[in-house]
Amino acid sequence: MTGTEALEGRIVALTGAGRGLGLQIARTLLERGARVVANFRSPSADLEQLREKFPELVLVQGDIAEEEAAIELVAAARRLGRLDAVIHNAGIARDQLLVRMPVEDWDEVHRVNLRGAFLLSKHAVKAMLRQRYGRIVYISSGAAILGNAGQAAYAASKAGLHGLSATVAQEYRSYGIRTVVLAPGLLDTGLGEALDEKIIEEKAGRSMLGIGSGTQIAATAAFLASADADYINAVIIRADGGLVY
Image 1 (tube, one colour):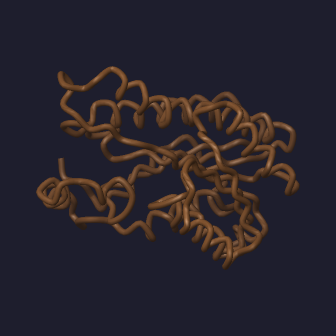
Image 2 (cartoon, rainbow, N blue to C red; image 1 turned 90 degrees about the vertical axis):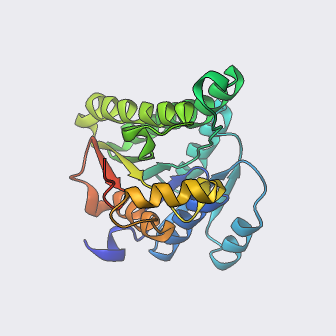
């Protein structure tokens, strides 16, 4: 299968779909024929508008770092018949230099970015074991690979996804379950929009291709959730425009 055929009819659960990159991923999946079950934490007018265009979109509100939300997201997908793929995109940042960082901020970033990924993986794998097939895509960050001043919590939590992905792939490879990490660089959407203009200019200058497009990353995520990516497993895909370091 190629192109949209590789996603046509596939059921994909997505976290952090209310805005930014998550919203773009949801839109791309739907446009390519996937059936999407989208998790979001706060009410989103954009997500509601997307459902008006794609009535088949299933919305599941909840904090993915709480186990009940992860259970309900997976259950909502299974009510459609099966769970082909999950994309863990939900993430937050609480940027501060290490010595000034409140412990509460460190804990909250890890709660959402890493605990949420663990809970989603745990319950998604349970569903995938029954069907002996599944794909898990973790949205990480270039900061997890290179580090970034002021982002100790964010970088550490995203780096944790790399170890989680590799371990899940090893534990369940015989059941047809594949994992992959997608690590974008600086984007024109999502958390990148909140950065100071000087920081954006500095980071853009480190990449051969400058600031990335959220639509391009969404298309990459959609491909990784498709049947065309079934031979990609336990790797980190850097979609960062060629960072120079």
